[in-house]
Image (tube, helix red, strand yellow):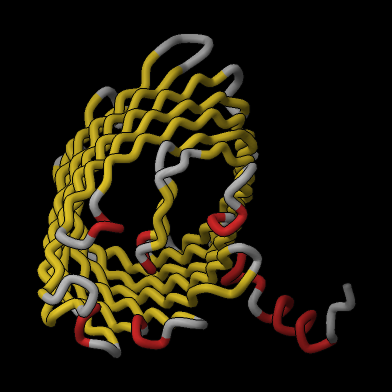
Length: 298
């Protein structure tokens, strides 16, 4: 890679400032398999009651930079791929690029973030999504962390323009840390309004969530996480297939167990149950997912 004369000049001039920058880099690779009892692509109501097994791969790269102990910048890239054995129409590839800037004032931290996501379904472009947010956060007594966030999401579907939508949400999450910050319990809530190109896909929604995470063990540390998610959505217009407005709710429980053979190498197993209730048949189902992944943290 060639480095221009201008770049070298800037590095030389800015060396005193650059010397104050603290940086940290990380990467994660996951390889494994998952099984779904029901196959679902929620964004387009694609559903199959036939369970299938998939090969799963993911790569996550990220960096964090701190300037003068108060200004923080983060950036990263993530790609994941689920390749089903029989159900090729549910093969999903996700690519995400993100950035985050924040400044820590005496009383609170103010920040902004941007996530750009591209999804491919069955090797075809499927969805482009842009997520922008503004947030405020504060740590109390080194044990309670509160974050409130305003979010805007823009969705563009390659072949389903009626589903193109703009989503605005406001949420708050609170984390309670203990065990020298190795363990925590969190609760959160957000309210969202999504307005789609076709009014039958527009809705108002409420989202509730809670997580319990506990890290324990000696030489081979372990981590157990129990996650709960619930949402309900009230759609704004009549859905032609059922001749009335849709009403959806979903309750998800997820149990994750990570066993670390070394600080960098772990085996992660997951059990997940989803109860989706709707007056639209394709969104009314019960699904179970099991996954077993080998993880390397660089």
